[in-house]
Length: 115
Length: 114
Image (cartoon, each protein chain N blue to C red):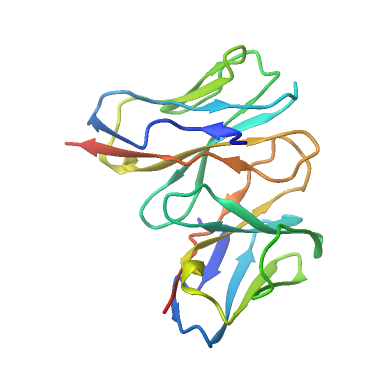
């Protein structure tokens, strides 16, 4: 069972397009995250939400715009992206934000290609 | 500074054999959590096992065990009786106290041969 669902799974967009990535978690968790996974680089945390409030914007360019309308849904709005933004974008959720032993549950990711 | 180091970019293992994936970490905190995740080609990151810094026993979950050596700051993952479905990328991660993010290593690709 996949508790965290991401759509679309694959996305190809031009540099002038606007698109959105969607994440939905069915686990009743309070915290949600966006990570970026580029080739040959460790996962990079982009945004963190706790109870629908943004906790961190990790020096992410403004062409990435997150939205968390409720504790179950998280969006990443994309506009005027660059080819170097091509990556796997992973959404994750966890029960609470600061609890040390809490593992994060990840979705399957959206493979984004910017052309 | 890199908090998690995984020095093995790729490994091959024969089916039914055990494999050890190395992970060293860097922290000045006494309380922290260590995690291992599996990422198959489908992309999803699958949680495998957790070790708390104050846990006295090494964590085990089925065929996964964590060889935790606190003094050496290492948290190696051991996969016993490898299966073809174990072929994937494996990531070591750490969460420090009062921090909500997981710091990930670069990962190790495991390929299981029949």
